Length: 442
Ligand SMILES: Nc1ncnc2c1ncn2[C@@H]1O[C@H](COP(=O)(O)OP(=O)(O)OP(=O)(O)O)[C@@H](O)[C@H]1O
Ligand SMILES: [Mg+2]
Image: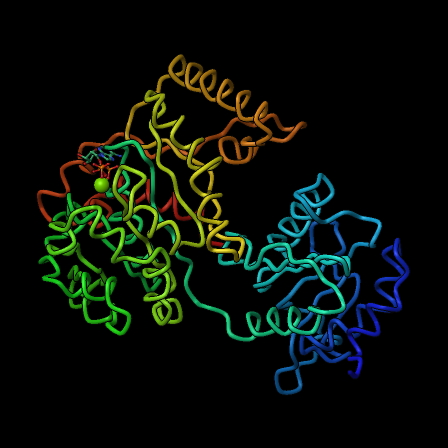
């Protein structure tokens, strides 16, 4: 068997090779195998936040050569030595993940869509969509036998990126605002010029379809999620809101009557866990956002929705302990369960937010105390949930900020007029624009 240049570069590295040796003897072959020429890679790229990322890369377009213009990177790479342990969720792994996320979100990296952490023993690819960074692969081991196919696999992902971010809106607890969030977030993202697909995957309640006044699917969705060949596109409808001579639109897959009538046992055998994810493949290349509404339980529909998602958005109520505990359970147990089956590193949870209750200062203090004890319990079980509850908290800032969508009668009343509240009311518009900006848009 012939040895490829990647294999021989890998084999040339001594066991504990530090970063400079890995970069000198392995990085050039690695970048070449990813499809980048020398002039398309720039070392020690300044992120604009005072950091230098080891390598930034972008393909040459016309005569715009990255090495010379040093602007608009597409991919960032953080190199480590073989003496740094990137496996098993180690502390070094976690700090390297934080590092690549920080770089991807820095001012000079706005155009970057991918990040890689690599030490030649392991490699992991991350995707950035707006301001959301999530894993695009698991942390993969590299060895002589798999290195060529692993790097080719990463190259293919980088060269054919999906356009959409798929978001499942989920909380085991009922009535926390899942459906309301999907309706209004879809509407505000459409208002902001994004192409949006909203999916009503709660066929027993059908709340999303009814809040938008759309007719139910009469078996098209059922067929798509139970039959291999049937497509989901035929079930898509368009929600239209006229504004003067123009209209705001977003697409919707309504709830399906036939799915609502089927028993759980029947559905469990007929619907493969990955079916919704697979049937959304072409939509991922068409839409900017795919938002999926799920039911308040951890059964078939929620599992399929979470499997189909890149990220999971979890609405909670500050005064409902169960909604907070359920968020923690989703992050510690349910989402990892799906991650293990899906095996591409996704989905991951976004930070929780408080929906639909007025919060006084003493109530906020009580909520924070509850969250503190949830975090303590999780810590004893080996989970760090701080970033999911207090995303801005660091040892220096001690910032306990949690985003709130306030309680607002017009939001509750909007379903009666079959119109998203954000299209009817300026305050509702601002609340959800705030949510979109804090969580999604760059
Ligand atoms: N920000 C808000 N202000 C006022 N009312 C709200 C707000 N968010 C949600 N509601 C109302 O709270 C109720 C529950 O919301 P919603 O149906 O979105 O929750 P859900 O989590 O989807 O419920 P389920 O678990 O039954 O699917 C609805 O009557 C809705 O109009
Ligand atoms: Mg609902």
